[in-house]
Length: 188
Image (cartoon, rainbow, N blue to C red; front, side, top):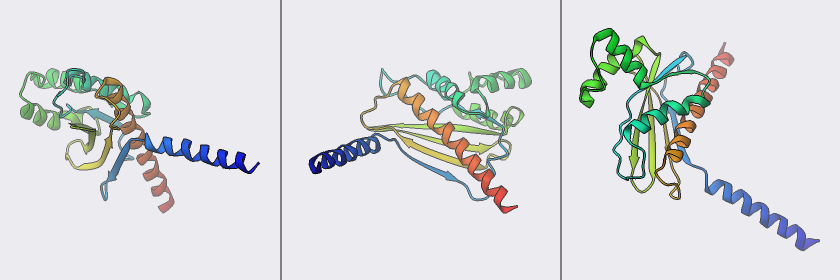
């Protein structure tokens, strides 16, 4: 009986230890005084990304992954291409054909017509892929929220890994907004 109990305890330690070992390392920061509860529409900006592996997704694929991963979110998410089309229709300027800096400037100036805030994804794909998500308020470009998540060293630079990391961002962002809303309700 005692041996059986020891085996059960050992099995629990192994199982629980394995789950913790495979969790992605992440960190989120809500800027002081930032109100993310008022964000109802979130636009996806062009990711800052350089493909360094042939098997890794291209920039266009990553742009689509960042938008498609929003299916786990309850808020309305606007794709980069939708904002680009709107800017093209309104200003007669195709930001997809401009260089990165000019496109980013026009995007920031006009994104307020389509969303309350926008998110810029920065990818550091060294030995462990790290995604940095920065959420800015449309119009003022004030930083509201940041989220950093690292892929495990065993995860390859694939579309599935990138999708998982992006989905985690949307889940954490909504959770942070809900927590802020609860905290605001308690203050009243």
